[in-house]
Image (cartoon, rainbow, N blue to C red; front, top):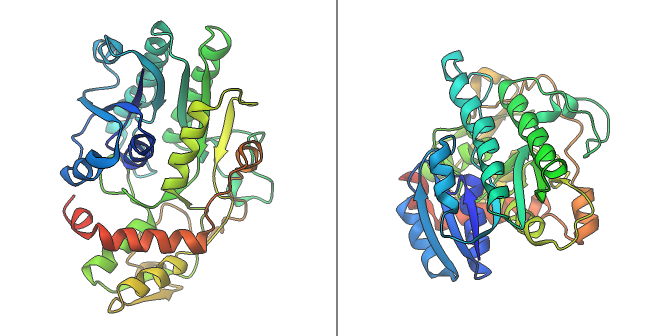
Length: 331
């Protein structure tokens, strides 16, 4: 039996492949883009087996071919285009096609192949402005997306629910918050790379960084996200069909700056109240502080698993950046 991972060459995909291969799993990795050579070399000795396939997730024939003769038992559907607010209107059709049509095709093919479990990767973008309001932001919170990306992710969640309730497909949705950590790189499918990744690049290049005095976010370590997805993929009797995977901790990028400076002592950084002086770009409106992080308590309680605290997570990432500097500078 094999595990199919779509979006496998992306940020979450590579973390997931690393986790699955360390468990000795047989993995079929599907992506639109080629996987970096550095990642291939890193994954090769980990164990398990890995087959790479490339194609368009919104093409029906391609999706059907993924399941042909491969005995796919589990699926993680992570293929997506993360469209930011600056997305040109001319790109909207592509986002809809990949995010919604691609998900529908994957759900249909998975049911036809009688897979045991399908994990859909979604996003807290479905919650819209909720993180800026005083409330508990959990799986029961209202969904009210603002941008195109959030609407497409909500649509995929509803499709997953339909295929689970009406057609009997075993689907679990993992709703993710902001993520940082190993294997982030510029793949061209995200409008703005995360501030932690931008800081990592500036530290590697020795370029002085200026960050906003504001901009706290509930960034969660990518390796924790991959471990959570694997837990949901194999859980024999999950109590729910939707889980937030998030640390629930708001923290400021200065924590990562301090960790990076410990590894790159000649690098310098500073904070500024002047947004125009910042060298780091943010998707957020920094005049509106985030006050309600996405809560992953349902997952942590049921599976007795804690997310890595931010103080430890930034140290882990800083060391990884140092060890994989060549890959990050030449992806």
